[in-house]
Amino acid sequence: MSPSGIDKGELTAQQVLTIDEKARLVSDHSAKPSDESLLHLRIVKERGAGAVLHTHSVWNTMLSDLYGDAGGVNITGYEMLKGLQGVRTHEHSEWLPIIDNSQDMPSLADTIAGTLREHQSAHGFLLKRHGLYSWGDNLAEAKRHVEILEFLLETLGRTLLVKNRG
Image 1 (cartoon, rainbow, N blue to C red):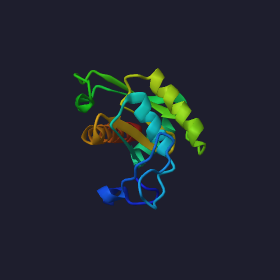
Image 2: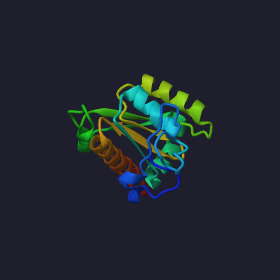
Image 3: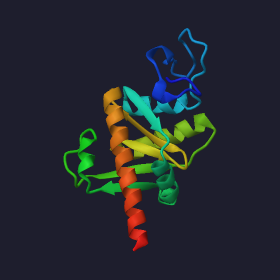
Image 4: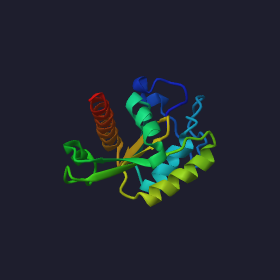
């Protein structure tokens, strides 16, 4: 797990923390695990993920707000979808659920678990007005999923802007 309050872009292997299934620090480290560790652990449990990543982009935050009342955003017809594990065609329909954010991490982890069980084929989800979570069998796959989903969310956002100008 990454420590709380550090620049994730500058994260080194020595800074990575080892935590147990209750998000308690087990490595010999003085840093504090991320407040969202329980969320990452629940995704690992529900998806069998080897890696979970979380981003805070302008586009995912805006679209999570815009589509929050719909409970998610549907992404279909884009070639980039084929970069998601198991997707073979651009005609794939990726439902990206949107979950209301909360500071009650145990309750939010339970909500995430229910959402992941309900949407078995989802490669990620959005926390409303907060950010994107995605995962993979390993770090490289999780990173690819984040990059693809971020690309697609930005594409949707920019397309909405162009449509609304006309």
